[in-house]
Image 1 (cartoon, one colour):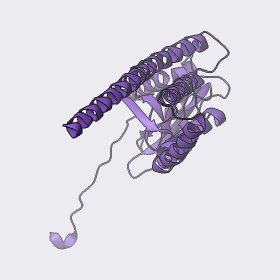
Image 2: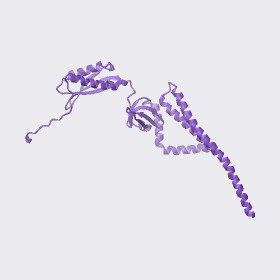
Image 3: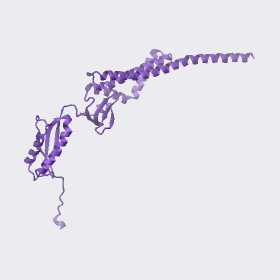
Image 4: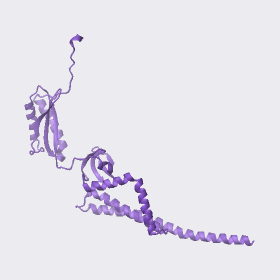
Length: 281
């Protein structure tokens, strides 16, 4: 009976201890969850507020806004995690050590991701393009909509979303069609060998000079650039503003066809003549 009574007392003491631990750590768990939820909410709010403030500053580069907002968001999340760990009694020195070890492990595991981050900073520092530029890389082409920490977002002329890792863009050649205000139109038109070259040159040059959006300086020129098997190639070179490039080019192609047809100058197409040998007769 004495052993049974002692066991009952031990069980009761154990249950009391479990109850105390449950109350103590239960409150810590609830507090930690509250801190975690609040941290995520504050991180999102801080990112949105910083974005709105930076967008209202006219002198601040729009390309830097996504990077700054993401850094602010991640900084708040890291601070939140530190507070959650501290709530469970983890010492600050231990937290820093754990974060350092975790950072090293994550860095080794995510080398490609860190390369994208480093490439993103280099793109923002060197500035081969900015938001709104139309670029072409080995991985795609389109209008730059956002330069982020990990990837650059493009919008193609067909309205398709393209996301390219920053490391791929940085390691490849970049063609920026929006960097300079003017572009040169190179238009090749073939005429028949029987046609008058000077007459065709004069007609095409007159069309270019009559187009208001073609620059006078440098002046447009038309030259013979190639003698093909079935045509003599004339090339028109004319300068225009970047935003007018495609409309002017399309218009010159259309009007050149009309003008050459009206003048009786043909635009030949490749053809092959079959010659029968004497032995086959």
